[in-house]
Image 1 (cartoon, rainbow, N blue to C red):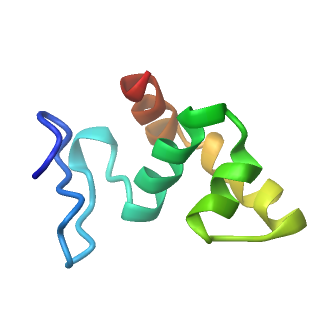
Image 2 (image 1 turned 90 degrees about the horizontal axis):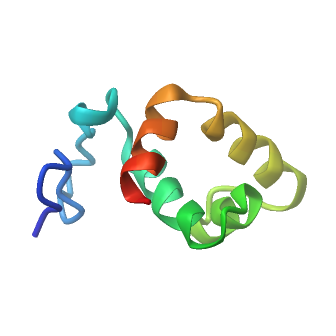
Length: 77
């Protein structure tokens, strides 16, 4: 089941991209969904399993600087 209007189906095994929000990757979408839980980028990265310790801070910062990620986060709020 996909989110209405999101352009992304979470159950898609092909790892498709979300075209509506500037070609988001599944990892970026997952990060955004975790980020809006507590607005802590490093914690969101760790919950997604993408990084640990210092690398989670750097990767979270990198994701938050992307315009398409910012747009998707605004849409989730």
